[in-house]
Image 1: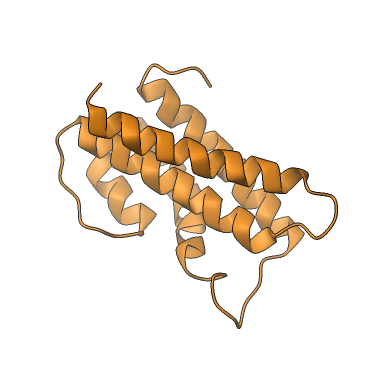
Image 2: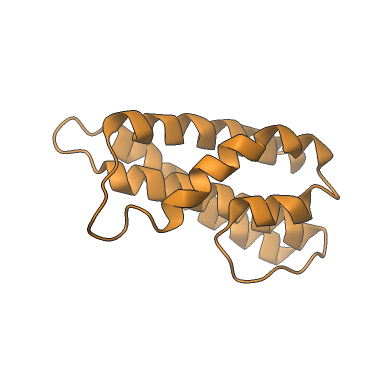
Length: 128
């Protein structure tokens, strides 16, 4: 595996760990943070896969745009289009005043992130 791919995966796992920890908080969980880190985990796994394949990408947070590029090497990831589109909004939506995530959207983001993470780790031959 390329060193840059390892770095992307390490960053993705950091976001995954943050999401998982925050989901366990009993008092005042940060639902906005859960959604954001779910999106970031998926984004970084997409970028890791593109890097490993030598495919360049723009500095974007649009998961469906990144998915479009990744489908050339991971066509089975098409099944995650809806999940990635859902997560994509969380790159910005809840980071600023005006909108906030609720428990339901945070748990849905966690579920969708876990599913995509498992597929991504499988593509790299990594344990889930």
